[in-house]
Image (cartoon, rainbow, N blue to C red):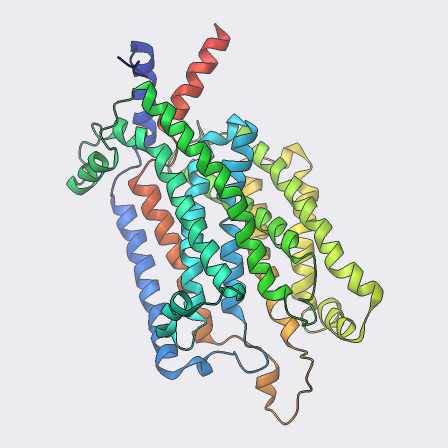
Length: 447
């Protein structure tokens, strides 16, 4: 007979205590309903804007012949970037052996699922004929980077979903008998999704092997998803995009935005879900160190992006850099670099700043700056095409997002919040069984 984990009175006591704390927030209350009502109302208004775009065409946006990629593609790149937080926290730090990431690994996977899922929908918003989307799968060419992008985004989403779900199976088995007062559909879902888990050691051994395989598989997939996204730009000779460092440059930027998103979510769950015991100040302090590390790497690639073309200063590069440094996009560019990257790195070097509330504020600046950074990458490079601009209206040359475009972009952000809210409210956001094991190991050390 296989040994059964969590079978001693001490282990059962730990499980009961952890389950009471963590499952306290797994419920449908008034606050949840009001928040979801607000999100769905906002989503309906934004989808109405998309219906206008669908009926009248992309002419209702600021997109024209010269600037054919605008806010939508910038948003897509941002969503793909932020989704990499799951790989960074669960796979890279987890496989290295950092046990402090256990309380936040599921939060990171929830964010990865939400952003990866909506990233695919963002592409549809940029299509004038979304009804032709199936053609990408039916008639897609292997030579096309767009087909590569669709493939890796889908694969990454599936792997992230499995990495979120597999480690949660023991928690569902623990929780299914502790859901008094919850809706019947939720109790039934826990019973089905727990797959009759009995906490046998052989089950945990097989689960560990499966999760480890997924952790290894998701690393090259995550690198591929943003490398391929960068190739959508880098394979063109367009000024500002024609670069050999775009792959690692995009990946390092993804680590920055993903880390910021996880810190923001950590603070929210710590305060609103009263999980300060698990999402403690030490975890924030360590995440602050991670932010400094990925921020410095990203700053290095930023220097490479502008120093090399600035040194050679070819005609096209000179025009592009002048627009960024002193021209139309100067305020946005310097705001991103200073407030969204340099100042956060400097501040987070001090331990006193690596506390929950300061970390939240800094991460908000970093995440907003990350979105505008994608805008800076996408839009200015199209403002000076290789062909001369002749006999066209000025609005075709100067890109300016319209209200319709902004509303459709907001819809994607709202969808991310809806997915995160549902997953975090209906399922435990902190792993119960893993935290129980962690506490047992600490008890053994102290004894």
